[in-house]
Image (cartoon, rainbow, N blue to C red; front, side, top):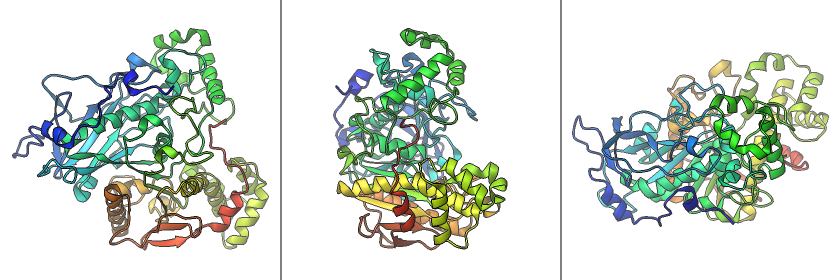
Length: 536
């Protein structure tokens, strides 16, 4: 039986009437000069601050300290008295190589809303809500990265923008479901249950900030996109969002229970804990758990993989296999990626890869494709298609096409089969950083979407062309969030995806909609089974 959010400590209210929620907002964004914006939520009063004409609320607690429910579903935040300051980000989930405060007490979200109050409480006056889910696979990241600052996006596109933190890595996806019978049986997916709790908070509270709880768009890059794809197959998430945008993030298949159980036992062995002594997990420190999570994965290179688990309860099926989830077939979706995704992952080795001969590159390619095919055939294909390409260029293109892009194509095809409204894009805009070597790499679209091209290190750079493309992408996103259709002024006509023409919006200094880009590469890799990393 699917566990309900009521069992997780969430009051399962029916969606509140828009007028009733709007009535809670007294005062709604106090706007007198020198007065900080305040909002009355059902839990208590929040006081934020103003930034560029936007009311900002950071570190809003949506769930209780997860140390109290380690490896168990989250518990909704409780009410408070007085005024709670919402000026600072909450801590991120503990993780390796964090450059910000971390804690198991990490269930916080951040919100940017245009300061002007809607003149009426009707749903048409309330603004679309854009919820950004951060990347970093399922093990790293937070919602407080400067690239995710929502002020400009909220102000220019009249949206309410939300970012958030949730449980990651061993804290969010250590699957104990084949060992535990209590609440810890959900442990393989509690990081995703955190997201569902955050979306429940948004449903119940966002109208007080001027947002429409019936018009919520999820957007996520890399691991964030994969989380969205997974939520689309989770019954508890049904009805909590109404559009979806995935940027370079797919989740075709998830970990099976046997694979996830095997990984959990590797972690327990590193901790010298027997599966019969799961209570011993409660006494361990954060550092002990993080260290144990670095054990060698039993089937993959590197440390233990953490991600969603097909546990038969919270996630009853693979997200996009063998079909797109019927649960979300009416939700309009944009699926996108970048032309040169993987270049950024090899930046430390780019000098060595640039010097590879065809023979050396072919040998290395065989280790990176993640599918069982003869790399010589791959190289032969690309040399025929692009006779001017160097070994280095073929290396990056073939890996991108066989990994993330392949997953995006499969998701789009599954959506078409389900007659689900879907739009596909590809970013071709080259990064100016590192001498242009990165090209249209993974993460270049983040500053373009948020309008944070001026942030130091933004892969897009801050040229006039980057700012123009950013405005185009933001307007596209605004239209999609409002109507489910991204088409409109300043954008080439962009038909929904079909298997006949495979229309794809190519975003660049001069954007265009093209039919079936990389068609020969797509057909070649379609001959080989695609199994997402971590599935087995």
